[in-house]
Length: 117
Image (cartoon, rainbow, N blue to C red; front, side):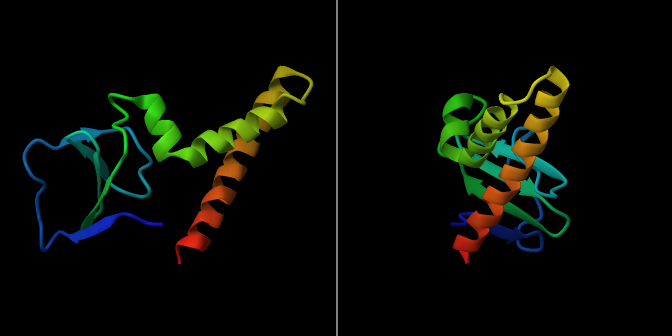
């Protein structure tokens, strides 16, 4: 379920005072990201802003944020770790972890999008 709100810049050309630029979060093609208050996450694009509310602010409660607001990252990292642990050699395990984590993350998000429609 997509819980983002899209606001065109012609309606709201500037963000309100107190918004802080951040690197925390997936950019999803945005130019910049911001956080406001305890859970508001804003992404800035050329023509619009998107806004959603995280259950937990990653600046204050990073572990709760990961588990609650980005479960696909936790799951894909776990899958990557499980598959990599079966490899012999550090380099093979590392490369397997990276590839498997990336592919499982992409698959998880693809399936998630199917159910959002």
